Amino acid sequence: MTGKPILSAHDIKVRFGDVSVLSGVNIDIRPGEIHGLIGENGAGKSTLGKVLGGYYRASAGRIAVDGHVMDRWDTPTALQNGVAIMHQELQLVPALTVAQNVYLGIEDHRRGVLRGTESKRLETLMAECGLRLDPRAVTADLTIADQQKIEILRALARKARVIVMDEPTSSLSKTEVDQLHRIMRTLRDEGRSVIYVTHFLNDILDVTDRVTVLRNGKMLHTTDTADETKETMVSAMLGGVKSETLYPPKPRNHGTVMLSVRDLQSPNGTQVDQLEIRAGEIVGLAGLVGAGRTEIARAIVGADPATGTIEIAGKPLTKRTIRAATQAGIVMVPEDRRGQGLVMTLPVRANISLPHLDTLSKTGMLDRSAETSLAKRLIDRFGVRPATIDGDVSNYSGGNQQKVLIGKWIADKPRVLILDEPSRGVDVGARETIHQEIVRMAATGVAILVISSEIDEVLGLATRVMLVDRGRIVDEIDPDTVTETDVLAALFQHQSTKDIVA
Ligand SMILES: Nc1ncnc2c1ncn2[C@@H]1O[C@H](COP(=O)(O)OP(=O)(O)OP(=O)(O)O)[C@@H](O)[C@H]1O
Ligand SMILES: [Mg+2]
Image (cartoon, rainbow, N blue to C red):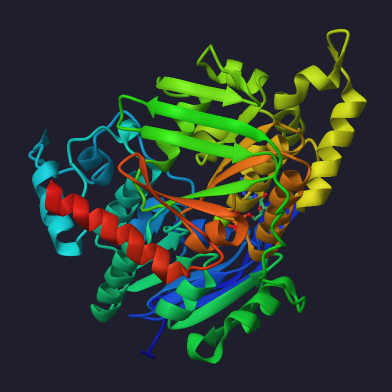
């Protein structure tokens, strides 16, 4: 697995305005290697990926392919040279079908006629790699996990020699992650290379050959993965500060029932007979991707139509709209930060104050100084970078956007808080802050429902965990007496029962 690099980038510098984002980064990608790229939120991983894929032009530095320094490097040149990138923030056209998105820009044109063979080609590609989607489904109707699969298929369809995968697994289930790892290994065995950006250090240890650490836009080092451990990687990313991976102690004093759900049914298959969460209690929803956890939450907050009874602190929720739910004190932080969570055209300050306009306004006017101090407090608490209140969120790194999203909801004190994938894409440090905040809110009497694909996270935070399959709660477990493996086994057990029944 040694040999001349097929792609290298030397002394890469990138500036946005007067901010230096990459300051002299070097990376060499060998043929047939899986190369991990790790670093804190905002360290510059996605930026480096975009430079390699030709999306961003570096202000200084050289890119070489097979040892030849390139005099131009843009997306077409990168593609011609076999470099493709899967973006962290999915870049799909919502109105197109799965097949159209996969082959966008590389459609089969013979004699100038669009051949419409995409569905067939996609079937073959999917059979080869083992990912399944309906080629004719409209992208906008799919879950984030399925959209992430489109991005993977898209990179594979381009037959790239080097594929940059920027946090490709953030919404995939355990089986799908394993599947993707298998695909990566196959690519490697064919002599192709993968640059794998992820915050899941176990995955780095599991599948990569070498790993490069970025810190504050600088390259720290590239090492053989065999020489690394989780601890060495964490301390390299954070600059020597050791991080505790433990969860904060769970609040055990629960008050009266804050959220009560009975006979909840929605047309998309949600069916919850009963669910109660008390003040100060954290309840987790675990399930395989596609099990219907998000749909349960959306039905509760009125984002999707549903029938049934919902009571907040003993009072029935009569109107079933998000607005009515918010007014009754129930808030949901969605999993899709681009689509539903943040307003990309507004600065950080306005994104944070948006849910709090009532409390921040005096006699109908927004109190600017109150808004400023709220925004500053949250930026400081969550370590949002860049740390300016007027920053343009659309340019923030994925993890920093997530911090703003969580922060803006946590600033309030709702009665019931629903968090869907709260720590998606954030680094180890920010993840800990988010966990501490969730527990702190519970300790002040908020009833919390946490949805996470990371079973470890659900077990670490909740005092009761519900297993979800096909929109139903199929089991309740005590997170303090089971392991991650037990939960996975139970979930698969329920799923395979479905397969037999179906
Ligand atoms: N187009 C842009 N304009 C201005 N600043 C940008 C732009 N793109 C990225 N940045 C800034 O560059 C820094 C590095 O961002 P990048 O997205 O590369 O981080 P990252 O390592 O991928 O982080 P994460 O783990 O959160 O995804 C961030 O501070 C970000 O705000
Ligand atoms: Mg990134």
